[in-house]
Image (cartoon, rainbow, N blue to C red; front, side):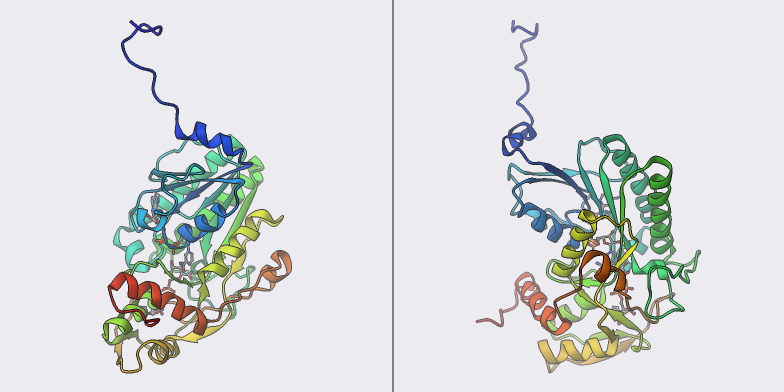
Amino acid sequence: MSANGTDKKPPSPSPLRFSKFFQSNMRILVTGGAGFIGSHLVDKLMENEKNEVIVADNYFTGSKDNLKKWIGHPRFELIRHDVTETLLVEVDRIYHLACPASPIFYKYNPVKTIKTNVIGTLNMLGLAKRVGARILLTSTSEVYGDPLEHPQNESYWGNVNPIGVRSCYDEGKRVAETLMFDYHRQHGIEIRIARIFNTYGPRMNIDDGRVVSNFIAQAIRNEPLTVQLPGTQTRSFCYVSDMVDGLIRLMEGENTGPINIGNPGEFTMLELAEAVKELINPEVKISMVENTPDDPRQRKPDITKAKELLGWEPKVKLRDGLPLMEEDFRQRLGAPSKKN
Ligand SMILES: NC(=O)c1ccc[n+]([C@@H]2O[C@H](COP(=O)([O-])OP(=O)(O)OC[C@H]3O[C@@H](n4cnc5c(N)ncnc54)[C@H](O)[C@@H]3O)[C@@H](O)[C@H]2O)c1
Ligand SMILES: O=C(O)[C@H]1O[C@H](OP(=O)(O)OP(=O)(O)OC[C@H]2O[C@@H](n3ccc(=O)[nH]c3=O)[C@H](O)[C@@H]2O)[C@H](O)[C@@H](O)[C@@H]1O
C-alpha cells in the first residue's frame, strides 16, 4: 500500500509544470490557433522566449499540421476544444480567433457559426473576466455588410442583411463586438477589436473557396479561374505577416478599437484573376460563373486609425505576396516548385 492509501502511483506532473522553468512572463491563449491566421500568429508569438502559448481549437477548418513545428515544445500547448464550451485556463492574453472564415465553411453549418460567434465569445469574455486577461477579438470587414460608404472607416455602422445566408457570420461578429464592449463597460475587461479585411498567404485551406486560394490552386492545376459575376466587385488583400504584426500591435497598444486592419490596395476580381494569370500561369483561362447571395460589391479599409494609433501599415504588395503563397500551394499540391 502506498502512502496515499492506494496502489496507484501519483500522476505525472502536467507538462505545464516543466514549462514554468522557462519563467515566461506572458501566458497567451490563441483560440482558432490551428487555422490560417492563428497559426501564423502563434509562430510570431513563439519567437519571443518570454511567451508561453496555449492553442484551443476544434479543428473544424484548422489542422495540427499548421502547428507541427511547435508540438512538444515546452512553451507550447495544444488543446482540442470547442469554444462553445467553457475553458478553464490561467492566461494573461486571449487572442480570440476561433470561427470559420471562408464563406463556404461558415455557411455549411450556420447555427454552429452563430453559436461560435456568440457563445464562444461569451465564454472567452467570461474567462477574461475570471482571470483578468486582456482579450482581442478578430472581427471582420463583413460588419460593414454591402457598404454604402467607401472606403470604410470604423465609424460606419454598416449595411448588413440580418436574415441572409451570410448573417450567421456578419451578424454573429456584430454581436461579438457588442459583447466585447458590454463586458468592457460593465466589468472593466480590457478589450481589443480588430476588423480584419481579406487576408491571404501560405497555409490557407487549398479548397476553402476563398478567392485567392481558389485562383492560385486553379492556376497551378491549369483549371479555369472562376471569377464570380459581375467580376467588378472589389476586395483589398492583406498579406498574413502584415496582419499578424497589426494584431500584436493592437493587443499590446492602448486602444480598444475597433480598428481596421487590412491593405487598402483595392482590386476587382477580374484584376485579381489577371494578376494570378500573369504571375502564375499565363496559359490559364478565366471563366465567369454565378455569384452567391449578398456578396458585397466593394470593400476597402480606411486605415488612418491603424496608422495613427498603432503606427501600423501593410508592407507586402499583392504582386509580392502572391508568389510567396504559390510556393506553399505547389508543395501541398505536389506540383513542381518554380525555384528548381
Ligand atoms: N482570413 C480572412 O480574410 C479574415 C477576414 C476577416 C476576419 N477574419 C477572422 O479571423 C479569424 C481567423 O480566420 P482564418 O482565416 O484564420 O480562418 P480559419 O478557418 O483558417 O481559422 C479558424 C480556426 O478556428 C477554429 N474553430 C472554428 N470554430 C471553432 C470552435 N467552435 N471552437 C474552437 N475552434 C474553432 C478552426 O478549426 C480554425 O482552426 C476568424 O475569426 C475570422 O472571422 C479572417
Ligand atoms: O475580409 C473579410 O471581412 C471577409 O473576407 C472574406 O469574405 P469574402 O470577401 O466574401 O471572401 P471570398 O470568398 O474570398 O470572396 C471574395 C470575392 O471573390 C469572389 N470569388 C470568390 C471565389 C471564386 O472562386 N471566385 C470569385 O470571383 C466572390 O464573389 C467575392 O466577390 C473572408 O472569407 C471572411 O471570413 C472575412 O471575414
